[in-house]
Amino acid sequence: MVRVLFVCLGNICRSPMAEAIFQRLVDDAGLTDEVQVDSAGTSAYHVGEQAHPGTRRVLARHGIQYNGRARQLAGGDAVGDPAYLIAMDSENVADLQRRFGEDARIHRLLDFAGHTPVHDVPDPYYSDNFDYVYRLVEDGCQGLLQAIRADTGL
Ligand code: 4NP
Image 1 (cartoon, rainbow, N blue to C red):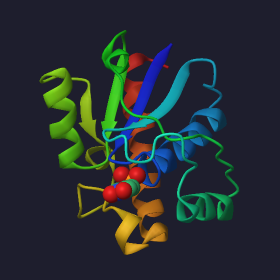
Image 2: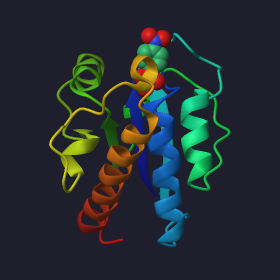
Image 3: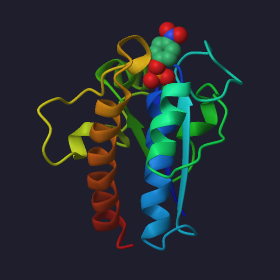
């Protein structure tokens, strides 16, 4: 089983969106039993809350339902192998490294994207730019799945 954990600050906007999009890609590829997908926040600000309405709305427009609740990153999230710890931005990478050390399993999502000029997923919590964020995250998720398949032979 390959474990993939998407990480952002609040676990209500970007990382749940990535989790839901990536789960759809995994299911469409017939890899549901091979890849386990989850998300978490570096902060405890929104623990237990539903995803942001903007995230749920843009996912629903793409036919994806998401029912997860926010949780904070836990020590066990870096235990076990193989795993991919996929941060939404450089600040999340720095937080993950502070917590788990310089771990080769920590990546930024958009480093897997094909055609994007930005490498940090901007936070839509303040900008409300959920459509733009969706396009970036989808691009990154497609590249990530290809990379995982190449790494693992799935
Ligand atoms: P996320 O967005 O990290 O993509 O879930 C945010 C959610 C909440 C806050 C900041 C960003 N906040 O400051 O409460």
